[in-house]
Amino acid sequence: MQLTKLLGATAATLALGAAAQAENWDMPMAYAASNFHSEMGQVFADKVGEYTGGALEITVHPGGALFKGGEIKRAIQTGQAPIGERLMSSHANETPLLGWDNVPFLATSFADNEKLWQAAKEPVNTALAEQNLVTLYTCPWPGQGFYFKKEVNSSADTQNVKFRSYNTATATFAEELGMIPVQVEAAELSQALATGVAEAFISSGSTGYDRKVWEQLSHYYKVNAWLPRNYVMVNKQAWDGLDDDTRAAVQKAADETGAACLAKAEELSNWYFEQLEANGMTVTDAGPEFLAELQAIGAKMQEDWLAVTGSEGQAIIDAYTAR
Ligand code: PCA
Image (cartoon, rainbow, N blue to C red; front, top):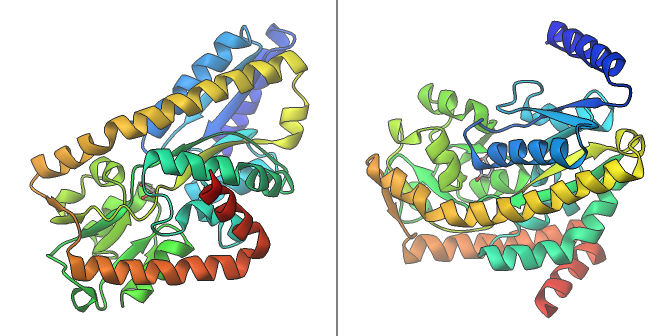
């Protein structure tokens, strides 16, 4: 990676020499190149090149290739990379407000998730700005449900199951169900399942499809607990270093891409379920007993989130409910 960075830096310097003001930004992304979030990252990069007339060119690096998912935010805060994308709620351990989209059963449709984002946007962007980050656009994953390698009807069936989590909320959910959470990046999920490090997880149909989890798992329960968002962030100094026209062009590209990505997520939701089924998985709603347990855990998690976010969290939920 050091060599890659050195070569990247050299290329950037040469490019600078060639075209006085042109800038090249590397954009680390955590998820598979074929995933719609990553494809939309490329759409965004293409639009930036077009709208800035080549003054700013962005090169996307999906799959955690340049920085692993867990390293992306810090890399951007510290200027090791000027721009990048990450699952917002993965930072809820350090900034609980960023778990706004992980409150179970609060907003379970794309329309409600968008309404919730409109309510959360200002305080969330302010919290990120305090961390040297400018948010350009966000995009939801489809609804979150549970993957298992057996039929599950209640928490009696989940005791001591090794569960892959992707943030604190998913780890809490697992613990409440008697499972043993282990945090694993989506990029390493297939391996974790193949080696038995994990034998269940919560996610969208999208990640199950990307990681071909039908090779180890058999059941998907469409719980639709929440729709977590990825966000594209820029280092504040890198952002301030752009001239006004370039910044406006990048923001236009971001606004368009955010809207297109939201539409894409919605369009693909059921398609992913069809693919899981075509590959032999049983895809169903959670049974009444399991669902009731999940809802009770969800209510407790909402209380816990409000306890740590205080009036700020409550203001988001109030603004959402009032919309
Ligand atoms: N896929 C990501 C986050 C949410 C989702 O649907 C993952 O499992 O890591």
